[in-house]
Image (cartoon, rainbow, N blue to C red):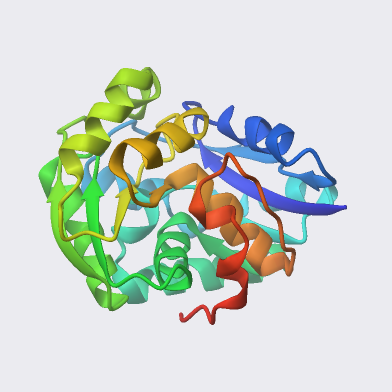
Length: 246
């Protein structure tokens, strides 16, 4: 059995994770511990408070008891708002608190893009424009070219969590760019797992979504290979053979 521990802020789209467990249909377990979201706002000051070291550290004991072999802070905006170096400090503090390999969804995106051998991406974000710009800057620090970044202006995770299939597909279509090799949809509050095959078929290219890459990153840290034919190109298997650059 392989157990990836997930620290998830509040309650929005965490049901994507048991869906992924079922799609694997194997001995992979994805326990979720909810962290204190504080103020539900896609606003830089609120996101910095949400990702504070002490808030993340509160959940690691429960994940250790669940047998976690790695821990991922399942939040994109609450990590990339710290910047490239700050996000590294955040994950180092989380690893120290957990006594386990640790990462975040922001690094999961960067590692997954590199693992798929891509250089140019489009960002289709639910966030306001200023928060989306932080994500674009984070990707650029990871040596990924952002050819376009579309912001939707949604303030709360609660609203994002209520989006359904048609809204997710429209977000992806609106955020795509002909020069992009991959489209990134970076909010863990957004339900995407059920739509991954349709997203990739509609756009004709790989699509990386927050809850998808979060699980991939945790498995990577745990040294576990896993494949899922309905989990997108990322889980077709070839990416584990590539060198993932930090």
